[in-house]
Image 1: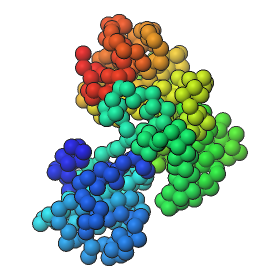
Image 2 (image 1 turned 90 degrees about the vertical axis):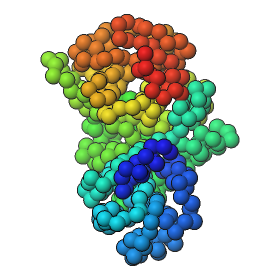
Image 3 (image 1 turned 180 degrees about the vertical axis):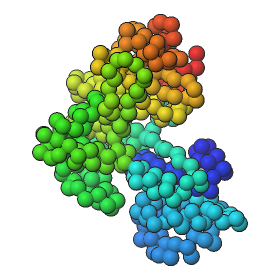
Image 4 (image 1 turned 120 degrees about the horizontal axis):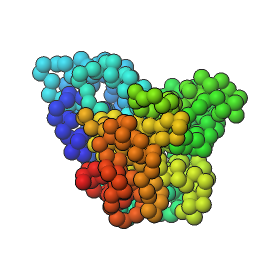
Amino acid sequence: MENIRASLARNPITVLTGPRQSGKTTLARELLAEDSINYFDLEDPVSLARLEQPMTALSSLQGLVVIDEVQRRPDLFPLLRVLADRADSAARFLILGSASGELMRQSSESLAGRVERLDITGFLLEELGAKATPRLWLRGGFPLSYLARSEADSLRWRKHFIQALLERDLPQWGVRVPATALLRFWTMLAHYHGQTWNAAEPARSLGVKPITMRRYLDLLTDAQMIRQLLPWHANLKKRQVKSPKIYVRDSGLLHQLLAIGTERDLLSHPKLGASWEGMVIEQILGSEEHEEAWFWATHQGAEVDLLLRRGDRMLGVECKRADAPRATRSMRVALSELGLERIAVLYPGARRYPLADRIEAVPLSTLAQPGQVFSQ
């Protein structure tokens, strides 16, 4: 919330992006009452009617103006630029959107120099506390899934969420792909979770061209359901992996797509380690300060799960679901050849201890205290 207030103070327009049902509207309503004349929900017919003449509706408003689900009216972006440039403007605009890719393309083209983007995720350990880890991992971070009364209710909510996204939301955003085709593709992606992406094999399985796979992948990435973690390329003699890694961003949705319903199912599933890795990466990216993030891997087997850039510092993160992780040759290679300052090995234990020079085992529970992973 403080980040939003600070952004609104220094920018005429703030864009808050995040998946559907992740809490954007709840945050906005803490800043501005839903029944305020300055609040526009573009899924509400009344708000849509008020914006039939958008210049008339928006130009006289003062203070905070909220426009929710703005991706449904991309024609508003040029108008927002005009309003933001007024010398006597007394308005600050908070615009909320679920389709991050298209939304950011529109805003970057129309609102360059006038807008700041903030991303919202589901629940984070820093909000829930370390004791919430098992439930957060199994159910994911969507509030209504995490807070459901039972595992069955949580599963049911996630099933309906997936259906609604594919059958209602994406078509409303202009996507012209059958929901059944996207569901088959998304389920296939769940089995690739944590692996480097190669469109050829899933294209053969689904009987479509690789370029179609690329389009489907970008659609789900823009909807913030999939993370494409890009590879870091260092100037080395080694052959390095150049394809992105694929993650289902919410662990609860991953488990739904893999038919994992209980903790027992999860602990015996072949994707257990990959699920843990994806959950840790999302928690790190949601809570640890960074400018950019990548992974790094070579065809000789050296790999770092996550690289973070903070100014001129490069930091590494390894995700190990082990009682006592050890420093590996791969970690030492990354330290020496990538110029990493440190590597933190996130694991589910309770004790923080050094593994080698500049390599440290860090309990996952440390993420409940923002900024502490690389604090020592």
